[in-house]
Image (cartoon, rainbow, N blue to C red; front, side):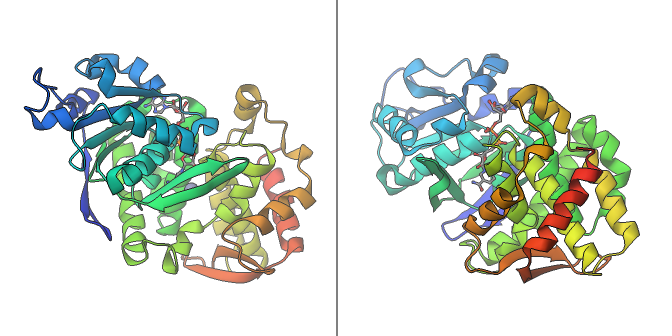
Length: 369
Ligand SMILES: NC(=O)c1ccc[n+]([C@@H]2O[C@H](COP(=O)([O-])OP(=O)(O)OC[C@H]3O[C@@H](n4cnc5c(N)ncnc54)[C@H](O)[C@@H]3O)[C@@H](O)[C@H]2O)c1
Ligand SMILES: [Zn+2]
């Protein structure tokens, strides 16, 4: 698959096996300056490095930066530390940064690749389902600033993407389910509810063939939106489906709820509002609720992240976060909703606090929390 961008066209390449990552690796000729590989530098998520160490064996220490994928590291300081580490490379604009990891690694390394020498080559290997099915295309780089999530950022596309669905096997259940939230979102937006219902068990089993097919379908759905509106000034807002609510759940729980899971919860809310408005009927809403409930595991989040449960949510705090979301530009709440049973999307600007509250209690009932 090729993606058109303001800067260049770039390709998404699927890899069968993690061993194929070795072909990306520089051989690093002993004589500095004699080989094109000499201009390469790798940033790898530390956990991914430990898990797939044998495939990264050729990288010399001074060409490798291991990144702890934590939100608190998604800062300008980390991006600058990578730039600093890259100064060991004699090359300038022809340097290539290869990064391997999830959305956190992508955001930091995309930003670093963008600012170093005003833009160097960047190859990204998304190793989480969330990064592979969604964030790896679309050019956004985001860094956290003080307590503000994703406040700093640029648009900078990679030169190549290499996706290896076999690597999603080692994701924790929480991270895998988070990715599935975005996969299900794209495919519901594409009106593919029958297909996802039929494939859900295989997706939950992480069947590589099925996961790869769904990553491709997700990217194919996202592609026309980002190609038409890369800088997010118009039609790309449709991709914000369910995020109005999802972002608020991430924020009020201090990110104990992972992004894709918050989006899945946001979909239940958006659908409840669409149902209450008479846009979608009982059957379609119930089918989507049942599907989404299977990929949201709040008990797991309680055990792993100390999530204290939906009962602790304060409606005022949720409404406040929704109003403060950077996509909300005026008083009336904007959201993307399904407008009919064929799952056509529309952007509305008149969602009320009462609708949100009603939808929240519906979601709590569906999730049994
Ligand atoms: N730039 C964008 O367009 C965009 C879009 C959505 C989200 N994001 C950002 O992405 C981040 C979330 O990304 P994410 O969910 O991919 O998570 P992540 O990068 O935080 O990774 C999640 C966890 O999975 C581990 N991991 C990564 N690959 C693995 C593998 N193959 N096997 C085992 N463990 C592995 C990581 O070490 C980490 O512990 C957030 O910071 C979010 O803001 C960016
Ligand atoms: Zn998202």
